[in-house]
Image 1 (cartoon, rainbow, N blue to C red):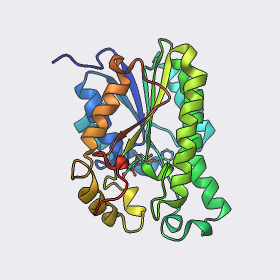
Image 2: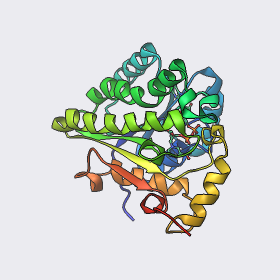
Image 3: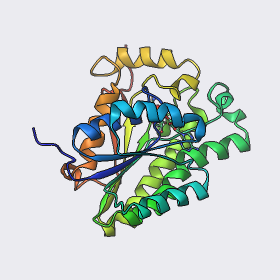
Image 4: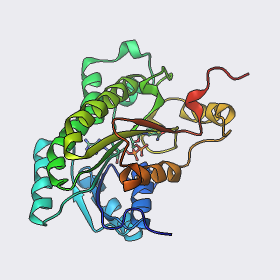
Length: 258
Ligand code: NAD
């Protein structure tokens, strides 16, 4: 079968370990022939990500903490120095304080609220602004969202509000960047057991509810999210921008299950 991303260069932000959704996306992108660049957050993750890359086979592993403008700028300089142009940017990043994912939302502190927004929503704007000039031939920017951005999901709390902002950012960025043939979309993934998800109180109960109620009667496999990221990054997705595509075994259509 033809490789869908042959000749494309993708940068993937948010790979921490082999459970990361970004790990599945990186594997799928390499499989489909893309040249893949991976970033990691801070020195603490460098060794793990470099080791994982022996399996993935990305062309380069680079640092980028998205809350630090100087690190984003250094990333851009490094890419320019290497003569890199980009076709795809995958933003697979979120963070909130653990206590804000386990107590009533009304108790969210100002600092906790701003932290979640900064890392999980604003970073898409910062990264798009910095890296989109390298998309000289047009391109695709993707981010990862969750149902908690449009419905109340108990304990998702401040992260749900950040995802609502993230999805709005997708629409505004799609409008701004569309003239340069740059598409911006989100994949709203069903719950997947990753390091971030484990920070949400009672997360395993969420998995049980989804497996019982989702039309496909099961949870979401990260490889399914990755394959949709292939579609959106590839020329097959050329007419799709400003969208949120659900890859969640259909859970989001359900109202009440008995
Ligand atoms: P993960 O913990 O593997 O990935 C989160 C990533 O964010 C990590 O790589 C972490 O290093 C990175 N990150 C956090 N702060 C950062 C910073 N300041 N600078 C750079 N990177 C930073 O978990 P995941 O579940 O793979 O999460 C990836 C994305 O998918 C997130 O946006 C998450 O909200 C979203 N998502 C996850 C699920 C799920 O159930 N796991 C469902 C829907 C959406």
